[in-house]
Length: 273
Image: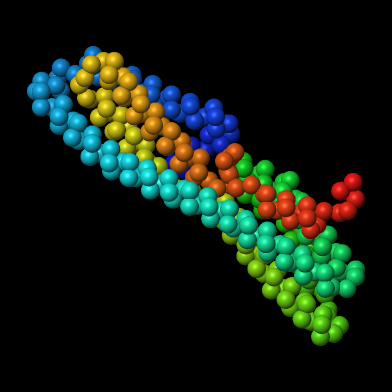
């Protein structure tokens, strides 16, 4: 089983539901651990008063290292999210320049090329993005058909004069740049934190909770402090998991740049009425 899929289910539910549930789950585990520890092994471990200080010292050092790990993962996940947003913006820009470049072609190929790009953009917004948010990588359908149709039309075009040769050469360059941006976006859909790091995170949070449970203090203070720490741990892990996939779930990079290009540049005039 792919350990990186341990949090896949969170993308199928609203964040305002999943976030609190994960926090409450961690609090419940901590409180249960505290109650079990106090009734089973407390007297065995805390035979010496210095044990509590030793546990507190170990907990402090462990928390620093674990907090550093979670912080680095959160930064890495946010950077991946930012990179994904930048890639989408660049693809939309490449699509814009490609569409504008086709205006120099004679009819009827001009309308053919622009229609392919128009249908491609619409399909990306309406078909590809919903699939991406479900974790499905778009590899076929109308999007692929329009890209291939555009490529075939470009290949079949035979420039008749120097002007058309220059326009055709520049459009081919823009098309290659557009394909590179598209390939990078599709590649970024697979971007995720390596499974081994999720294993370390999961083991680390269990050890952190275990150290919280091993501390010796009044029961109500123990439950309050343990609950606060575990709640925050749960929310941070939830944050990292949500940002782990730039194109997955509700908190993800949207098709706003494509929608803007379509509305301003490509949308047929009849659609404005």
